[in-house]
Amino acid sequence: MNTFRLPLSFALLSMLAVGPALADVSGSPLVDHVRAANDRFKDVAVAVAEGYGPIPCASGPQGGAMGIHYVNGDLVGDGKLDASRPEALMYEPKGGKLELVGVEYIVIAAAWDAANKTPPTLMGQLFHYNSSPNRYGIPAYYALHVWAWRHNPHGVLVDWNPKVSCDGYSTGAAPRSAADVRK
Image (cartoon, rainbow, N blue to C red):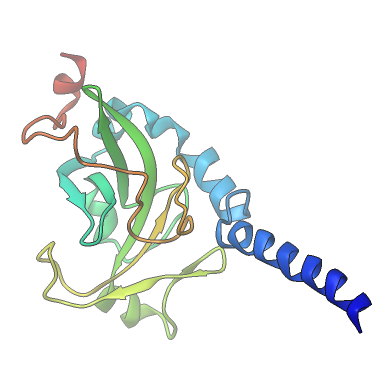
């Protein structure tokens, strides 16, 4: 009987080592596609030129943050999803610059539900439902975060990232126009 304990122990230890790796799906088709399709937004001037504007930095209730969201209101309201056109871009303020850390796909629930029988998915990933009222003051919506440029130890699709901070944020620091970016 003792001859089985050692191999069983190794098997259990190897499962524990693999578990966290499975929780982080970086290298997944969705993450790879998001990076390839949205790498241009590493330059915040491109985001501003494409109609994205900032909202204040969002810190998590239990730590971590989402960063400064640059949101494209036209995309939020169009009722459609496209991996290459995220509704929001997430930046971390660091050293006076903004570093792209992830994207957020957002669709207003009423618009989506009117045209679809099931909740939204993007490349197999189910969106989270967020009711109204909410901190953004918008109608109920579906959202999916993808941490494509910053590792999230809780998983690449989790809302809050403990590796992101708003410590470098100050009101008015986020560029609002292409002219602000060039200053």
